[in-house]
Image (cartoon, rainbow, N blue to C red):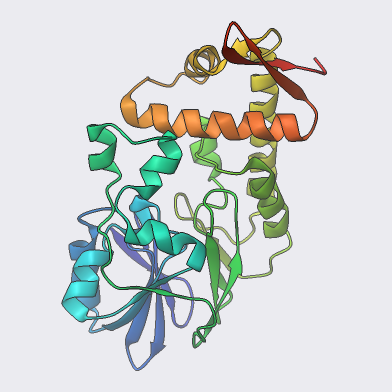
Length: 291
């Protein structure tokens, strides 16, 4: 973890999941996300070494790699964590995140990997006035994700886009609603600020090119699925082709992420009239209309 100052009162911890820090006043700070399980203790060490006092936590969304340090910090400092009403249910109930990704009751390994800590002190951010910080809605990756802007003109944008380095290596990122994600990407291009910090990737002063790369990547993924579905194909066949073409190693956690996202792409393609589905021998299969 590397602490970096990006404004008079704004910092971030460069990590697998970047963590925002805003000095509200007199060394009283808030955090923006807390990384994965075990990160709370490391964040606390940075807080202590800088003589800061934690007042509350803001979560861009409640996926487990963004709230993993919440429990430790909430219990140590007796502070609340804020998220949107939409994401509140996922924050409160241990199995909801993986249940919607999996599309049913998850196997044991998934329940372990994605388990949430439960009702530990989350509160609704709706209607709350935050000193020196504003937030905007950024749906698509999750149900109720938001981004934060500090009065240093620094944006913390969660998983609303992927870094160019990530896309060049992996191509694929989890998306719940493709249409909403595309709208969010277009909105990001209009944001004004001095620094833009995604949850996964490098901070940049101008994200226009990065957003264009994200949009191109979405279109590339859509074309990939249309190509796979040049003839009627069921979801297992589609996923098998995606594993091969994206050079992804099949494993349980990857299966739930890829399967959920692929279904989102199929829904978007059907909604936009690019693909159709029907049952063949009692199997739902998809075929491209405009190939």
